[in-house]
Figure 1 (tube, rainbow, N blue to C red):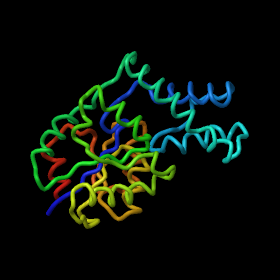
Figure 2: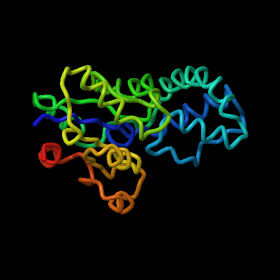
Figure 3: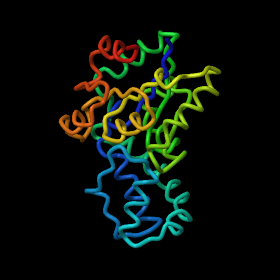
Length: 229
């Protein structure tokens, strides 16, 4: 049976030394408000637009105000993100990621995509230093919807267009590290494979009852077995 495997990015595949947080804060301060402080805001598993709406709503900005200026803020964000990545002290791949992708790519029954809260341009920038974009010809992104729960449907439809195949929901797998990765998989009725490499405690993830919970993506054989189960 074929599989559509959708990967999250931040803390699932890469650890980023806070580059996205710093770039986002800089952009929102420049375009909206110098008072903004993103230092303690929980961004795990959220989309970029959702994070912006939350931070700016706390400062009293209306939804219409945020929407009207967000395109400029994202333009500044992408410029800043590129600089942050270039100068990051600790920016790399979690253990096992490259080995897993290489093995999955060899299997004709497995089709890869992204499912991430990053806007698409930001997602591609984050993957570029590791030459990972070639593994993912399509994806669903925060630029598709501010609601993470909407993204599986975007990914599902796009995959069928890109690969010219129909995918049943039992053939779809979401790999992530955060609460919302589990919830969007469960909400869409697809398999969740979760790695406890992010900021969410393992016990919190276990309490959500994902289909599979791993400490890392290091054990390629076990992960492929879970994907194909």
